[in-house]
Image 1 (cartoon, helix red, strand yellow):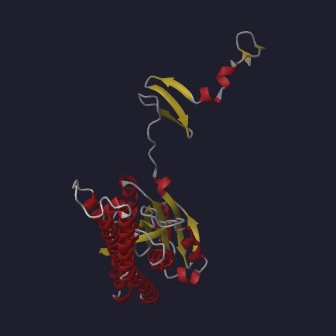
Image 2 (tube, helix red, strand yellow):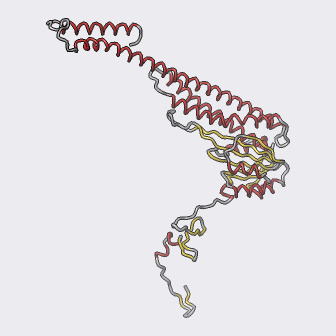
Image 3 (cartoon, helix red, strand yellow):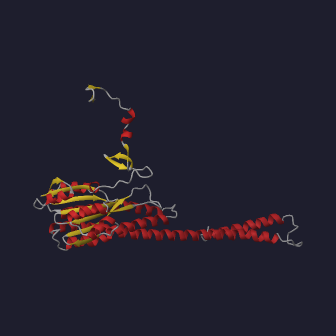
Length: 388
């Protein structure tokens, strides 16, 4: 370092403590203590903790790309992506969002011109599957189902978990909002990008690919649920069956949650596949009819599972009632057998001076023999009638 006053060079020794990265990440300003994280300075709270970090719009955007002629031509920010899509014949922007809040979705809504009511639904989530039109934009809500792995079905086992996908479909864009346990759409995007002839149909092809994947997941989960139903059926009718009512009821609840996701989706798919819409087109409508057929298959399977589980619950309750009757008969038979020695002992427990065979030498063994004989005869009779 140069000393201006003397024109000479001298070396400065820095305090090693100042080079501690932890100290370099802290500082004190007029507003209080600050902490450096992510390349930015953040003011600490009164308790010395970092304030909750707000996500920027880029944090909720999973992917944003522009497609034209079935090919991916650019990856841009939402506003630039929409502008780029307009430069290509048949081009469109596909943007995926993960659990955005009102502030983030407002920025996207401004760019793509989304209706406020649909935007509100996309933020709050917890919507039923539905299809609505807002001007030149279609808004579709789809429920996703994920199978929860478990070794054995118990009274507290979680079988299925639900998530939500909100799809905004326009002439030159498709915006997908994902909530909850809904699986990511990376595999859908890659699969569609590998089929440029399908992707060339525009945003409607993206809608079909997403819905088709969701319904295929329904089929996979239905296969897993069927294994639980079969296992429960074997347990209920096994020789060493127990009280399976709680397990049956838990599976019934999970099936109801599954049905709530699947059944309301039939009407939106029917509208998309049968009612003419310029955003969908005749070709994609034919593909959507195939998806609707798969959904019908899932609904029929769920109805069958529901009826079978109802039958298992009724059978289990009937088995419990029969077992209780058997137990009551055994208890009654045992009480009747014990009534014989109790009656004889009651007679000879009385304090009378003159009683038959009271002073007889063989009176006691005789009474024991009579008691044992009568008890054995009662036992044989109850065994013959199936009470024991």
